[in-house]
Length: 369
Length: 165
Image (cartoon, rainbow over all chains, first blue to last red; front, top):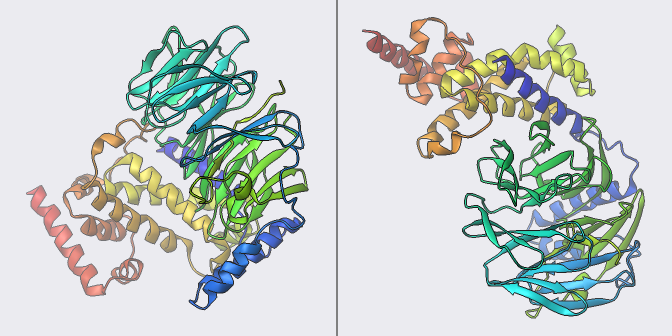
């Protein structure tokens, strides 16, 4: 019982330290205040049928003012892969703003040094040179391809309906690693070559893809939507809707981040730090916070606004964070208190059926070539 | 009263005061949840969730009111919900979770048979004989008529006596 009490106290204390007081806002962050104020307007507007027109009007005007009308350039070096779900395909975005649709891919990720990309179609795993086309294909119903390794020896992990599989970067040696792997993205351990973390639904596993030996097994009772490592491999964040469990390099629980009624949408470690950026959906709107996993209680609000935030990605140098904001039809490049907004995103990543795209870009802003 | 000071401190952001409040109320909250659910891991989750719910509403809490009934209302209602839901849920999901807390010892053989009761009866017996609320307070906590509380208490005790015989 004492163990239960201690576990519960840690969770309660962290939740208390990370809570947002319901009293008057203390932050001087103008964006936060503007966002919350606008959210109240939205709620008031939708509360009554005559308010629907007002709501539509408000929704049209949500967003950061003085936004650029188009993505003229990325604020940091590197290239970006953007995956538009529901048939929108995958896009390549260069630092100078050049955009090209790579094809009707359902997912796409960079190779470890950004020389190639691995993509999926409903029936194939595809390795491609983004400038020169397809290198090889493998007929698999693959999801969440993840590529790791050195410049001369790489592996690609991907999930099929029959489990987690791994193939070498040249398309050889494809094999089943674990038939019990469930529908969640795998994540390569940056500190252990060819070693991948994945979910079985009942536990998080860390296993060497070549020797198939299990490094550790953490019985975490959550269904993760994502697994994300810190760059040094010291921490693995297991992201679920209601909580994020941060495991250390031995698979022990280092910290649990709870939501207090909000839902986690996404999380990613800032490169070269143990700061975990987390995207939250609250009753009033959305928030992006930076949680220091080494210092419980230290969470910093980066941005808040009405409606839904989508995916976000760190720039390769960790100085910028790109946040998608579908409600505002904007992308936001955040750096400290500086916000650079780009509008008309739907127009720039059009779908064949003209519906608003749902854009994925987490982990896809990669290294310079 | 110390508890009011702790709540006031917690409302102002004091972790130390929140911990005092937590340490004071955790044992009984956990015990009540465990007796209603009969499951240590579920009891831990329920008691923890009750405290998280309390934190969410801390800023709105009236310090003149006692904290325990407020917390126990959440605990017992969630424990009843969990016990009802378990009947509809495959137990295999529970087998591989974080290590369950050890089972607390029960006071006397009678309480050991509480698991034989329906969840609603368990709740009122726990509130009356473990948390020592009066029938009137239980009626208020569970939003039940006082007569219903009394009848559930009587039936619950009768059932436990039958088990003993």
